[in-house]
Image 1 (cartoon, rainbow, N blue to C red):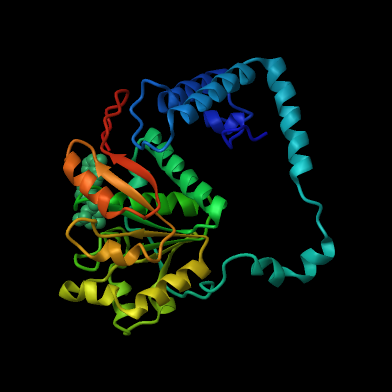
Image 2: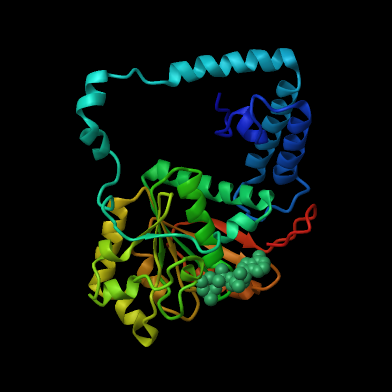
Length: 332
Ligand SMILES: Nc1ncnc2c1ncn2[C@@H]1O[C@H](COP(=O)(O)OP(=O)(O)OP(=O)(O)O)[C@@H](O)[C@H]1O
Ligand SMILES: [Mg+2]
């Protein structure tokens, strides 16, 4: 049963129906650490009201799942609801209309031939589970925004360089593809500098956005699928001084249009806002922006200035990167 939080009790505590009471207690404590009032959430994406309702749901999940009678009643309730939720299957439709089913899905990148392996995991995999949960929150925010107004293209930016845009964007794209099961494109747009994404790929010499915008490569021949996932990556390529010129060219719109048609979700790792024209260009093509602020590093003035520059742009959330978790030694 999906509660107001969008998760059932098992999902809320990150346990399964077979988990022991001890596991449920661990899950309960972890969940409270994330959403409880004393924790410094890495991402300030939930309002206080939402966090309170999450905590209420977590407590009620704990009470239910640790009481055998309540748990039994809850399990039956879930099973009934799942049956009700399961749409009736029209066998004829299933056997004859595979193509029709596909039509409601984004099309256009099924034949991508480039397949890359991750040389080392995206940063996410080495992170504390509590941090991973923050990425899930970010992705559910992105997903909610998408559901509300059919938005699917989002830029990740910050006031200054080095605030964690790439790390945030790569991790969010990875979670979107692997956990939220969305066909996701990760597009690296900052062509002034060497690609960050290629450091994670086993084959670093893959084409990039700059090759496409220069007309040296077709988008379909340049983008690569990460093996075993529905994540597609187009690194920036390095175009040095021609970066703004290339980004401002008509090719950018074509790339954005093609990605919008072909994917459930497009996450764009951008250059910083201040001092560069890039976000002025990119914001024309996106449905929303995720704004990253590096805790204890970016001055308020810079954040305010960048927020001013993004006026009129739909900022769907702010990620406070590097906030202290009081309860963990990890720092990210
Ligand atoms: N919370 C953090 N704690 C420690 N290191 C971090 C954290 N966030 C990012 N970093 C590190 O800081 C560096 C900059 O991060 P990242 O490349 O994601 O920033 P960026 O905003 O994309 O930078 P740029 O503007 O240069 O593209 C990287 O080496 C990254 O591993
Ligand atoms: Mg970057």
